[in-house]
Length: 178
Ligand SMILES: [Zn+2]
Image (cartoon, rainbow, N blue to C red):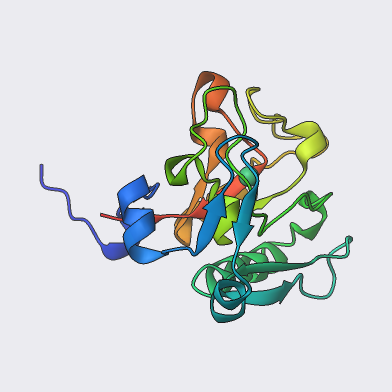
């Protein structure tokens, strides 16, 4: 049997730390003691754009994203609208946020930067999809199970696919296709 692969069927995966630095370099300092991340104003001005949830979503959402990630997330919001799943977005819980990854053994250096620090990720429906727990089941309040597949088709990576303590079902980030 032969299988054919088209562009849209190719798997979307997470960018590695070195790919992140090559594609989305960031100008910041990280306090090695406290882990506080300071991004330069110039970097923010050059790289970030203001994004808004389209009309018809039940929640107010205005936030900053990397200019390369913003169109992909906006396409996803449009796909959610078309599929009549706007109500599946219950809460907005963050986009651009200059900080380190959450967790105990995060290095206080560039390798420990959260993808939110580069404006490449969004968190939604956090209350029902806490980090380290499996995603809220389909049919239950706050589920991401119907809207996440639409995101993955468009090139986003869903944290709900990660295993064990890394599972982060509130989280979506810009990915890469091999
Ligand atoms: Zn996140």
